[in-house]
Length: 320
Ligand code: BT5
Image 1 (tube, rainbow, N blue to C red):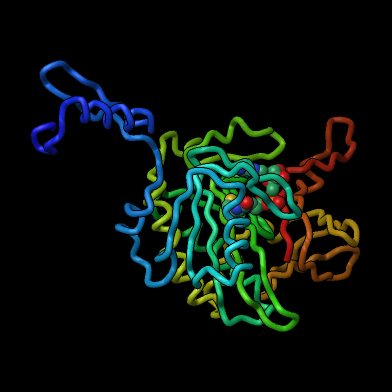
Image 2: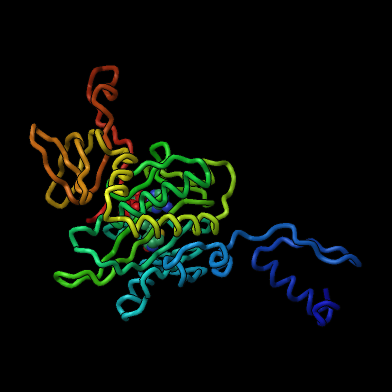
């Protein structure tokens, strides 16, 4: 190696030590050299760029080792008038990852924490289409790569077997009548250990579901490719229909907690603009925003004494 690189053996050793500090496992044997045993699971923007097949989404992509929140970093760029349509920020870790209503989003190493900036020509009333397109795209990518079926829980969660594997956070910059840009944040528990999270989060990860780590770069490239196609077609009927078909909230009994109070009822349909149609007390109500709690059907939740237990199966939330 020293000969090939025209540097001293000590200089080779110094670089090997630097790679070891980054997490590469390298064995060495006197007189024979070094051998790469294992590479760390780190994202590399150039490698992602090399496998990315998109036209406009993710063509401008950066990977940060740590940031407060990728959404906040992207919003900051947007406030400065920067951030081209389709630019993406990824981070290995977020120290202040956030969900809706400033709820914390746990973002340790191994996950996919990603934000994209979108500048679509879209009326504000159609904003939820972006959420629909991204939800469908993530389901398609994870299904085709790993054969894992995700379900969409209204309004912004993706679940595997009733456990949250992904959350989407949309933040918007707009004038009264016109959209400036949307920053869409996607958080996926990929190789991080979701069993370390509080059990009441009902979370899981690709690692737990598949029993092995996944190639996060391949996953990111696949999601961006599906997302580009879905966003390009988000106003057509196909995305809405697939989003509705993949919903696990449709036909469920739910409780919606919103600023105007709680509502309980059965979800009879999901509308094209993302609204949930809730039948409660014989009336159909349109719900555009709120935290949605799936309730078990009453027949399943009577305990031995016959008392009705309103068991929360899982909870999630969104802001529209
Ligand atoms: C969400 O909020 O589900 C949206 C999460 C978006 C995260 C991405 S990561 C990249 C980008 N940058 C950011 O700062 N955010 C975005 P919400 O529906 O409010 O759900 C939040 C709730 O989910 C929390 O209150 C916890 O109960 C739970 N939770 C927190 N971290 C989680 C995780 N890693 N996996 C599963 N559940 C989690």
